[in-house]
Amino acid sequence: MSTLRTESPAWTTEFRAMNTRVEVHLSVSELSQFKTYALRVQNWFEVQERRFSRFISTSELCNLNASSGWVNVSPAMSEVLSLARQFTRLSEGAFKPAILPELEWLGYDRTFEELETHQSRKRNGESSVEAIPSRRWLFDPVTRMFRRDPGTTLDLGGIVKSWCVQEISKWLRAQSDIEAFCINAGGDLTVWNRHASGKRWTIQIEDPFEPQRDIVGLELHSGAAATSSRTKRKWVGPNGVEVHHLIDPRTGSSAEGNIVQCTVLGSHLPECEVISKSMCILGEIEGLAWLTRQNLTHTLIWVDEEFRIHYRGPKDQLEPITAKLKLDFVHDIQI
Image (cartoon, rainbow, N blue to C red; front, top):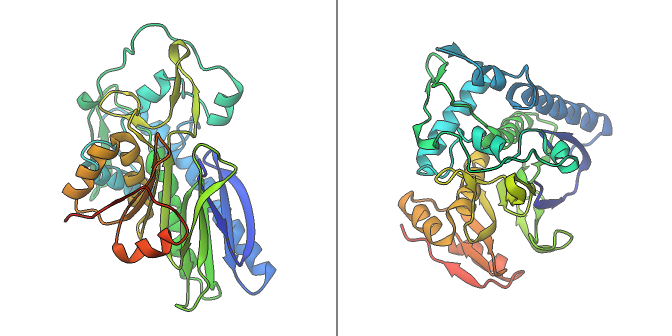
C-alpha cells in the first residue's frame, strides 16, 4: 500500500516482501557496500515474512493461531505482540489484531496478489463470526508466553511491516560507513542522516483519488512517516459489495469514516502507522477527540471524502507545508 514516494541522493534498489514493494535508498561511497547492505535488508524482510505471514502455513503466527494452552514465542514475536497490546490500549480499541476472522469472511483469505486475480469466495447472509470484543488473547512479555481463547486468531499485518522497517533502520544507523538512508515499505518509511547538514529527503504524498499524481512533497532530515488509505487494497467481498482492508473492530466491516487517506509523521514508525490507521477508522470528529485524549502531537495530513486537505500538528512545521500545499483546514493541537 505505497502512498509515499521518495526522491533521494543515494544508491537505490527495490524488492517485494510482505505483499508490498520495499525500497532501499542508501548513501554510501561504494557500490559494493550498497549491495551488501541492500542484501542484508532484503534478507531481514524475508526472514520476518516467514515468521509473521498468515499466508505461510509454517509461520510462527500460523502456529500461534492454531495453538492451545500457553506457548513460548520468539523474541521477535514477543516485541510485536507487546506493541500490539500497547497500541490496542493507545487506540482505545480502534486497532485490534484479533480481526482475522473478519478479514477472511470478507474474502481476504489469500495474498492480495492472488486476491486481485481471483474472485473472492462468495458468501450469503450476515457474518457468522464471533464479536471481536469477546475474543481474548493473553501475553506475558517477561516469560514470552502466549495464550489465546478458542476462535481467537490474530493478524499482525497492521504493525509488523512498520516494525520491520524500524528494526532494520536501527541496525543501519549503527553502520559507520552509511551516511544516510531511507527504507520505504509500501508507504511506511524511515529516513535518516548521520550529520545535521545532511541533505533532506523529499517524501511525496500520493493523491488518493489520482495515484499518478502527488499532492505535496515533504522534506525530512530524519524521522518516520506512515500512510494509510481506504483506496488501496480493495476487492469485491461477500454479496458483491466492494470492501477494503481497514477493518473497524466495532462493526467487523470495512471502515466507513470520512477520512480517505491519512499520513502521520513522527519518530516511532509503528506508532505512526497505528495513528494513521486509527484516524481512517474513526473518522475526523472521533479521531480528533481521540488524538486530544491521548495527548498525541504528531504531524498529520489527511484527505477527506470531498478531497479537502487537513493538517494537525506543531505550528513550526505548518509554514513549510503551506508554502507547498493549499490546506483546507488547520486543526489546533489542544493538550
